[in-house]
Amino acid sequence: MNQVILTGDRPTGRLHVGHYVGSLERRVRLQNSGEFDEIYIMIADAQALTDNAEHPEKVRQNIIQVALDYLACGIDPEKSTIFIQSMVPELTELTFYYMNLVTVSRVQRNPTVKAEIQMRNFEASIPVGFFCYPISQAADITAFRATAVPVGEDQLPMLEQCKEIVHKFNTVYGETLTDPQIILPDNQACLRLPGIDGKAKMSKSLGNCIYLSDEADEIRKKVMSMFTDPNHLRVEDPGKVDGNPVFIYLDAFCRPEHFQEFLPDYQNLDELKAHYTRGGLGDVKVKKFLNNVLQAELGPIRERRKYWEAHTDEVYAMLKEGSERARAKAAETLRDVRHAMQIDYFG
Ligand code: TRP
Image (cartoon, rainbow, N blue to C red; front, side, top):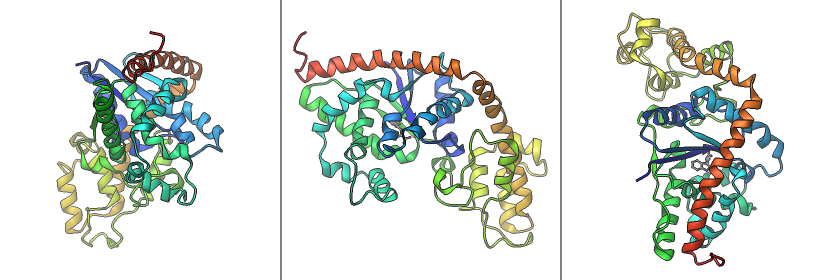
């Protein structure tokens, strides 16, 4: 079977290190593995509008920011098709047909939708478009016949809902759609990177993110201000590494080479953790190490981003070409769907 990746992000802000370890880094590895025949990476502007209907300028501005972040991380337009969701109107048509295969109560039970309704104070008046976004996400995935969807953990309920739609469609109209598999990060720490304030999620509205586009000194300031174990007051005190953001970030980012380069007194992270737990290791030393690790990882990303920032005309041209290619693929699937649904009246 053709191995196809489809994934994407809402263009509501610049991407941060949570996106990076949660999904972007993995996408680049999958892209370069040579195991995939087609890779589609979507900037989900239509989905972003489902809860930003009054702020189209915000969505528009962030299209280029997300595209720059993709290129900076190593998504290669020669290998991956990067496109803009709304430039592929076939996705909207598919969504409309899939809506008939999903009940209102099923969407209401989707844990991600539930959490978002709460977060956005939509309880009393949920926009219909927002409510339907899990269905539109199923259209995104199936339109490209995706076999693999590398995303963050929060997208798991969306994938489950998509699989249900695929099964229902194939049962009612005959085998047409491809069943996708979710690909989650293999490293636990990468599943959900906390904010620098220790809050469970990195989010722009909480102001607790480290962005891929942050300058070196911004990263350093953010790292030095990070929450740690609140009971680790003096260097001699024993500290806790579980739930300690600094150590979670190290779990996500640091490799043995980083010790040789920046902290040769320790062989590896286990030794560093043991010392912290025992007492006698100060937060500042650990934070300085984390800063070095992050600078080593994010420096080349920032430099690549700067290059593309100076060539945005090329980036828009790449998005246009990608959107055309994506549209051709989605149109093929839509043709099959219309045929299966017996609405292909003129042959
Ligand atoms: N929901 C994803 C996000 O919030 C974006 C997205 C839209 C997506 N359609 C998708 C992700 C299809 C994977 C597959 O970032």
